[in-house]
Image 1: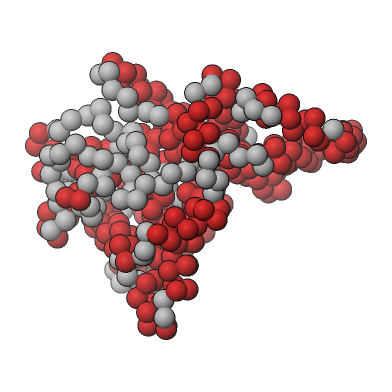
Image 2: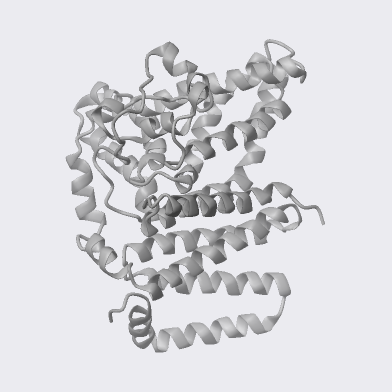
Length: 408
């Protein structure tokens, strides 16, 4: 069997989170909150899962552009690698800056800034939508002359480095502060304090911010999250609220010129009241209060952690053997994982419709087992199970909510 050893990055990631948690406890700091950490990991799980289906397409784009439009023939020697690393970070700076200054890009990047905590789990808050937009910016690299093999290799390094700067446990790092992006610099970037807004866009090198006038030193204690905080841990809401707000703002703008100005204008031009309206429409007014009350329950947390741990195990196994997994089973696995992370977010919001997701997950699991093992008995079990749930739904529902939420 052909293994993908890059899957070990999942275990390394979790190990680092555990170490950071222990260091924070030793420092007597409360840097982790249950709901935020679960929501952060949910976003990261989905992104890493969908990468399986998009990485090949991104490589194809880089390779096609290099073969047909490369201006230079850059070789994979030491200077080529150094040049690519610097060029990648330069392009990232401008992508990142524009993602904060243009609404249509902010809608895909806002997910990364929603957490009111700042720890290693926050680094996981990257969506597949952001990955697609970034690819559009990095497409300039193969046109310059960097081969696709070099680009994909350097992007692994460029993606690993920022993981380590999402932490509050590390202070300032002396002379490194003058050259590299450090945890202190990135804490400023994630802060919503007025003096820190739209600062420190660099990913590896802080020189771009100093060169283009967007640098700020960490002085006052940062306050993390959005300027108008997102009072929700829903997986779906976190991903799509930005698009919905932008859509409403565009709809209300008079004339095409005004609509284009909204799409390509700054995020602070979108009326914050739009989100409040949408929250009333799509979110339960009492979700936050119920969440604060019930999420302290050890049973509830154990249930959510169990789902999260199981999903991480499935994700790790899937990534490890993905090259040997048939296409239909890849799709079923992806569907099961996506339903689970949506379910975890709904549980944090105390949603009543989570039971339907639970039934859906069981149905996907049954189907996967049937397609994998080919036993007709699984079809029989699925049919009998479906009838049983339909017949005793009210009893099942009542018992489920008693066990999970402590309510009927």
